[in-house]
Amino acid sequence: MSFLNPAAGWFAFIIPLIILLYLLKPKYQEQTISSTFLWEQLIKDIEANRPWQRLKKNLLLFLQLLAAFLLLLAMSRPYIPVAGYNDSHVIAVLDCSSSMMATDVAPSRFVVAQKQIEQLINNMSYKDQMTLIAMGEEPQVLAAASRNKKELLRAVTSIKPGRESAALDPVLEIISALAQDSTNCSVIIYSDGRTQPAKHDVKLSCPLEFKKIGQEKDNIGIRTLAARESDNHMIVLAQMQNYGDKIAQVDVELFAEDKIMDIRPTSLEPDEVKNLIWEDVPDNTKYIKINLNHKDCYNLDNEAYAVVPNQDRQRILLVSAGNIFLEKAWGILPNVELYKTSPDNYDKDLSEYTAYIFDGFIPGELPHGNILVVNPPAGNSLFPANGVMKNIKEINLAASDDELLKYVDTENWQILESQQIECPTWCNPLAKYQNNMLLGRGELNGKKIALLTFDLHKSNIPLQTSFPILVNNLSNWLLPESTSNITLDASERTFTLDIPPQTGEVIVEKDGEVVGKYTHPFPAAFPVYDPGLYKITRIAGTEQEVSYLAVNQINALESNIAPVRLPLKYYADNNSGNKKLYNYELWKYLIWLLLLVLIIEWEVYRHGY
Image 1 (cartoon, helix red, strand yellow):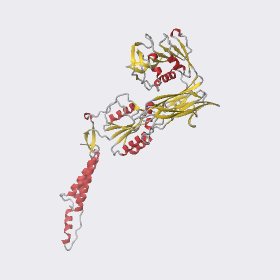
Image 2: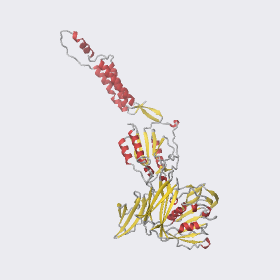
Image 3: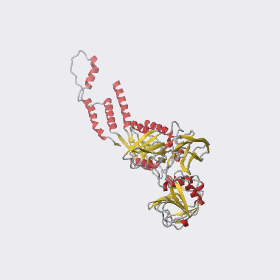
C-alpha cells in the first residue's frame, strides 16, 4: 500500500496530544465536610482525575486514538495498485454532421444525442472526468479531461450541427493519443453512423461504445441542379433520389428567379434516381430554384439554387475519327464552341483553341492548351500501355471526393475493353479496375490533362445519366473558371471573386439582409454562411456589378439518413493480458470506518462505560 498524500503525517501530533490530555487531570481544593456518605462517587472521580498518574485501561481513550489514526490515514490517501479498467475518464464524441438534423426522433437526432450526453454528465461522480469532442469535417475538442459538470454542460449546449459530413479518421487519431496518456479511458460515440469512412486502421487500448441515433430512412433529396443557356434558350436539369423504402409522391416546383414556372408531380420508387428537364425557362434568367414539396425527416436537401453561368463561349477542338457521344455531350455545353477534325487533318499549329479532346489519337507534340485524352493509342509516349483489360464491371473510386467525380455514379458502368495504362508520376488515378487506372487527371508542363483509358463505344457509359455530369465536371476543370456566378455545395465554406482594381466595396446579401461588407484590402476568400442564394455587389465609384452565389445542401452521404453501424476499421485491444495498473484509493472506506468509531465512542461516553 502506498500514499498519495504522505504530507498528512505531519498531523500525527494529535495522537500524543490526546494522551497528554488524559495525563493532565484537573486539581481540586480541599474542603471540610460533615459526612462523606453522599460524596463517595465524587471521591472516586477525584481519585481518577488526579494528574500525572499512570494511564489505566480506558475504552474512551482507545476509541479516540483509533479515530485519530483513521483520520490521519484517510488524509494520507492510501491506495493499492490494481490491474484492470477503471472507466473514470470518458471520451464523448458527438456527431455534428447535417444528417443529425433529421427529425425522425423528436425534436432531432442532434438534440437527442445532446440530451444523452447531458445525462451522462449529470451521472458523473466526483472522481470522473470527461473529454468532449465535436465530430465534423474537422474535429473540435470542446473540453479536455474536465471534472467540472457546469463547464461540460456549457460545452454540450454550445455545439451546433454543421452542413458538412463528419470525418472519422481525425477523431480516432485524437482518441488514440488520449488513450495512450490515460490508464482508465473509455469512448462513447453518439452518431447515426453516416460518417466518412475511416481510411486508416487505428489501434485503441480502451473500450468503445457506439450509441446509434435515429430510426427512419424516409427522405427524398435533390442530387443535382444545373442551368445552362443553349441555342438562345435555357435548359434546367434536376436530379433527385428517393432514399426511403416506400414509393413517394412529390411535387417538384421550379422557380425562375422569384416567379414560379412549373409544378411537376413526380413519383419515385424506393432508391430510384430520376432526372427532370425543363426547356421553357425564360431567357436572361439569372438564377433558378427547385423546391420539393414533400414532408420527410430531412428537409435540408428539399431546396436548391442554381446560378446561370455567365461565361464567354470558349473554343474546343475535338480530334477524332468519329465519336457522336463526345460531339453531343460537349456540343450542348453553353459556354463551348466545339470544332471537329480528324487525326489525319490535325495541324500542330492550330493554337486558337482553349482546350483539345484527342480521341484514339495523341500528337507527337502537345498543344499549348488543356487536354482530354480518350482511348489513347498503343505505342504513345504520354500514356504507355501494358496490355488490354476486358469485361470491366466493378470499378473502384480511388478519389471519390474529387471534383471530376462530383455527383457521378459509377455503380452501373460497364466497359468491354480498356487499355492497361501505366500511370505516370504526374497523374492521379480517380477510378480503377484491379489497380489499373480508368480515369485520371494531372498537370504536365503547365497543362491540365485528363484521361479516359477506354473507347466510349465499347462501354455503356454514354447511356448513363452520369455521363453528361462527368463531361460537365471535365469542362469546369479544363476550361478557365468564371467567377461572375458561382454555385457551391455543402462541402465548400469559402468562395473567391474576381475583383477589379477599381472596386471600392463588396456587399454580400442573403434574403435581402446584408451579411457582409468588405473594403480594401479584400480577403483572398469570402466566407460561406447558411445554404441559400447570395447577392454580391461590387461597387466601383458610381458603377455596380451584381452577381449571385448559390450555396446548396447537396450531399448524397448526408441525404441517405438511414442510421447504420459506424464504419470503423480499427479494433479495440481489450485483452486481459494488456490491462494496465491504476491506483485504487481506500480513503472512502476509512471515512466510513471513522464515522462508525465516533458513533461507538458517543455510546460509550453516554452510558459511562
